[in-house]
Image (cartoon, rainbow, N blue to C red):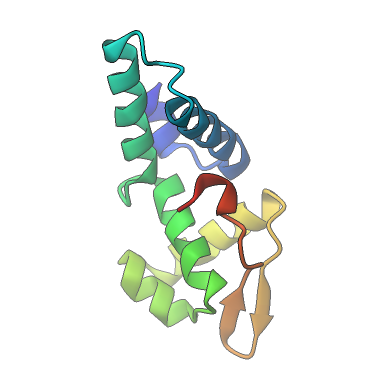
Length: 117
């Protein structure tokens, strides 16, 4: 399952799983079973990693909250322009409003507040 989520590009679905896991870990729901808690922590780290599509999309959102150009995002994520535009399309399909102001892409401040990233 972790590998499937890490490679899947459906931002909305992965965001829901990520948010639920983070809340469950914060609420100590897995406190009685250290193996389950460890597996949940490992999955959260995997999702947040820049090795996952979702992790790179989260980083893009963080960059766009401050206003970022395509070139800045490309350098930070170490990927091609084509990949960035594919990720932008995925985020827009997930309902995230992305605004282009001049050469800078922006999203609403506090978009990732739920996850405290």
